[in-house]
Length: 250
Image (cartoon, rainbow, N blue to C red; front, side):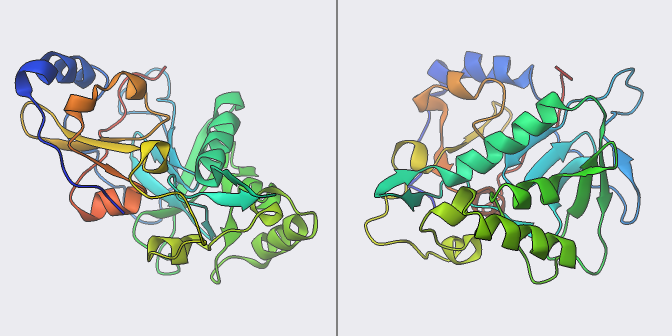
């Protein structure tokens, strides 16, 4: 879901986008080959680049963007209804994933999944190869297990559902249906405020990029620099907007 594009004033935004470019390189990092276990260390880096959370089931490493295998979390713009009040369940999942990575004392390792993947760029990602991010989300009720998920994932979902954790204590639309336009009655209107939090813009050399709430510099983006907004990263990618690669490890 998106709102109409806005034309930015180059004179007002050029200096800002130059500054933004210092946080991000202007080319998209290549995807790794299937079947390799990959940590987040950049080529030749002395210290690993910290992985960045795009949404509740998508992470970005120095090697590229990965969708967590076996799970589907609410999208960034998705709202869930708890006790008559709308909550930001999509943002909640993203922030929980970000907290887990921020507290990690070991590197994140993502292993791409081959033919069993639900979509390209799918991987299993774990901290120190033991703390599975997808399992963490499922155990906290922050994501749903997909039909292709391992039995252990489905058991974790059932446990969270029984305990009414996370989204299981709310009324919500399954993320797959939400992406197709499904909404709860009286849901907040897409395209207003935080409901569509993804900011898309073009750099001064014409590179189309999009930023999410957990990106550095996100809150400093002027309205005049925003070309359009999206409610999900899938929608942004579908229209040709891309993630800038990681740069500063901290």
